[in-house]
Image: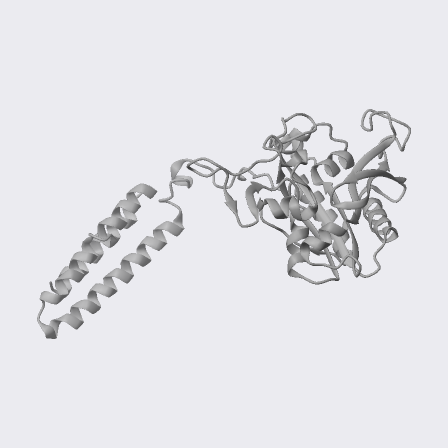
Length: 348
């Protein structure tokens, strides 16, 4: 092909580009000349058939044609006259667009970060663990005996093998963790004291869903182990936590309780943030809100992880993040946290 042919081709193409009036038509012309099977591709494929002395000059002219066409397409696109959404399509492009609402961090995540942040400032590290656990980490290592009701099939999600039966490994049956406390076992088996850790995460129990229960919810487990740790250390840490979350003007009380993995064990209540202890629907007219369970780590737990109970002591605590959120913001139905109703979530 001669130079005149390419010049004529360039002139024809530029005239077509100039005359086009829609984005769709411009794209068709682009494919015609620059597409994989377009005119430029055809010219390039002819180069090997030319005499060796003609190839360089012909190739240079084809490249110049390609550059000229690309510039012509860019000018046309920038002019806006070939845009499917521009003035040529009858749309006023000066009008403001439709704004998109900004997202925000979910309330559960906000509360979890606030709680872990408080403990982090007290020197605790934040750890996360697997949601699929084994019986030792979830039960046995925490001094929960085989006959305990929580180990029953009706109270725990055990994982079934494809062919039937429950999946197992060397440390027992596999299950969806029912609390975040298994990380207490994992951490203590891998580290020597002193350790101070909080563990946020999702947990699973086969509860019927209602205003105060869900088969999936969020917990934060915390524990501290060192020499000469006593109950007054636990009270001081939990007091700092409770005042940081619910305000400096709250009252607190510790009630004796029982947990297999702590001894002695307590539950912590705070004065109702709505009625200030006078009694209201949120607190069941009692004036107190239960927020967490805690206690001194049982010596059997230390033995299970290879710690010497005579040498070390420590405390542990656990709380429901969902419950903390409900109490702090006066929400009366846990299901609201998971229904993804933007009208509700955007309040936080």
